[in-house]
Length: 168
Ligand code: 4NP
Image (cartoon, rainbow, N blue to C red; front, side, top):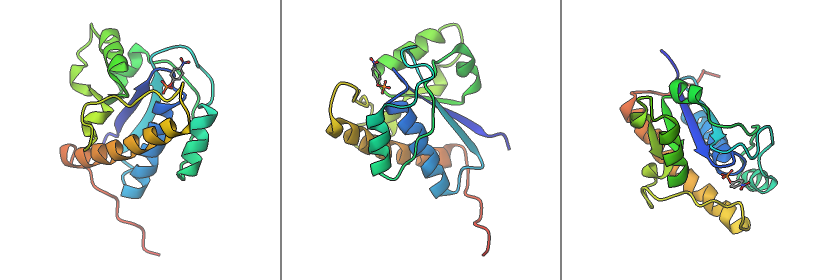
C-alpha cells in the first residue's frame, strides 16, 4: 500500500511545525502506524532555511521526551503535489498555502491542525517565537491533543491499522 504523506506548516519552520513533525512521528510509533505514514515540516517564509529548530523548542521537546531532528526549509509548489495532508498551524499559514496553490486543486488536502483539537477546534496554534517557556509548553499541549485527534481521524478515514508487534 502507498504510504500517506503528511506535511506540517508554520511560518519559520523552527518552532511549531518541526515539533508537530517530531511529536507526530513519536505518536505514529506508539500507535504502530509508522509503516504507513511519512511526515515532514516546512515554513511559509524563507527566514530560517537550513537552520536547526529554535533552542527553546528543542529544550521544551526534550523536557517532554521528544527528540527533534530537522533543518528549516520553505514550502514549495512540489510539496503541494506530493503531500496528501497539509496541516497549517494558523490562519495566516493556511491562507498562504492556498494562495501558493491557487492554480492547483489542493483545497481538499489543506486544513488547520486545530481542526483536530477536541478543545479549541479551528483555532490557531499560537506563535511562541516572541514569548517565554509558557508559550512553548502551551504549543506542546495543543499539538499533543491535536495530533492524537488527527491520528484517530486517519485511522477511520484511511482505514489504517497497526502492524502486529513481533513476538519476543
Ligand atoms: P514558527 O515560529 O513559525 O512556529 O517557526 C516563528 C519562527 C520565526 C519567526 C516567526 C515565527 N521569525 O519571525 O523569524
